[in-house]
Amino acid sequence: MSLLDGFETFDFSEGAPYVSITRNGVTFNRAVVLKLENPRFVTLLINSQTHQIAVQASDESDPKAVPFFKEKKSGQVSVRWNSKDLLFTISNMMDWDLDSTSYRVAGTLYREDKTFIFNFDRAEILK
Image 1: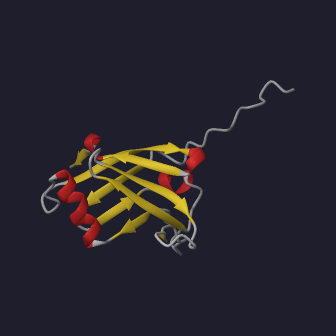
Image 2: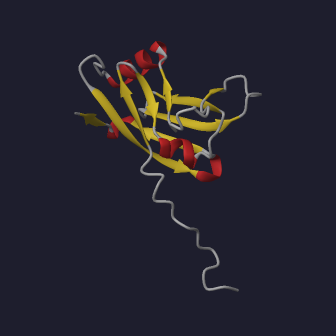
Image 3: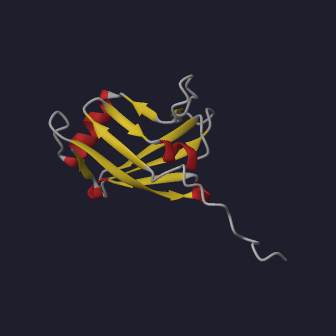
């Protein structure tokens, strides 16, 4: 048994996971993608009563799975969804005017479920 058994190296380059919601789309930052281990597909779940969304790594065999991460030639690691229906659903759920205000929501990782949950009641206004 080694002194460092059970320890994992902390990766400072990943950063804090968050999702940004603007009138142009929903963007998951690099940390979300990396901490979910670069899933090609995810399922998006919405709880309108608790004002939360969940993003769970999935595979393309799931009928509700949507494309998530696709490596870009630029090397950029983030995901942007431009779905007007999704923006409308979120803005209605939160009573937000996305034409005048943008938001950022920190995420909580549930590693064993390969899921991030974002609580929109804790959203910060982007300046």
